[in-house]
Image 1 (cartoon, rainbow, N blue to C red):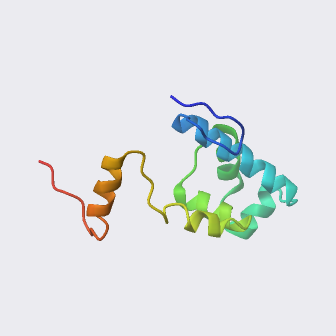
Image 2: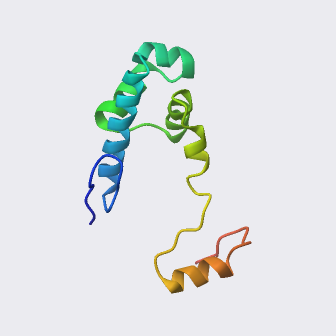
Length: 109
């Protein structure tokens, strides 16, 4: 398991740690931009209770998360999230290289 060094760097974390940090960072940015939950609701179509749920218990749909992030100007960061290869071992690098143009997963029965 990995620990969070600060709100910007995930050295190692659980899924819940990352969700909590994202929700905390989102709320901070929302408030900095002067959005209330109701005003953000009118901009995004995401209901205010859904925004509160994300901020307080760190749960929301991916669609709502993307709408909220876009409203705060983070669409480029979202679009680049999986844009580059990421590997940790030479074996993983070779697997990625081999599967570069792959269109489908493998069938495992």
